[in-house]
Image 1 (cartoon, one colour):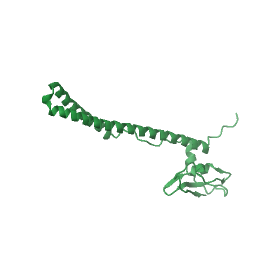
Image 2 (image 1 turned 90 degrees about the vertical axis):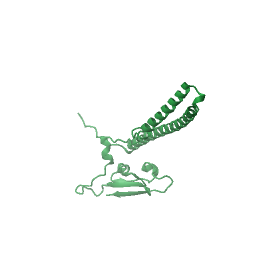
Image 3 (image 1 turned 135 degrees about the vertical axis):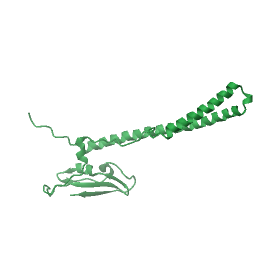
Image 4 (image 1 turned 60 degrees about the vertical axis):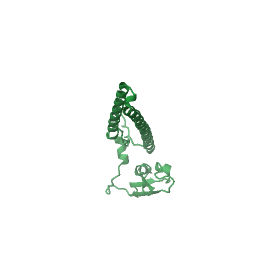
Length: 188
């Protein structure tokens, strides 16, 4: 019936866009977690202040019980006991429960067709052509701030040649803002 379609080859632009979208989703998750943390922190401090207020009022009523009716004294004792118990239960659930807060983790998932794009190529010396360019490793950055750019550079090889300008945009991001960076490349 004709020729079968070529297997999918991810383009560098498609992979960069996918990683940009996944970075955006991760940043949204991180912002969401930060908002929940602030809310829990405010609620925790409010609870402690409220507990102190209830303790002060209940203690005043309990120490001066002659000035109040038995119903008020009983209610003050119950409030003090109930709030203390609730605070202990809340502390147990929030502080000592490791599953209370969600853990942020990377969300990048490679499709099977994209996995080969990121693997380090193996050189077969029996089949190697003198004009073939193989990038074994490549990193872009400075000091302890580096990005692996080997997959990006491999995708830019055309007819056994690599032509590019080393810029943040061309390398897919800025690993160390406001600092001079370099490209370290190992190839065959």
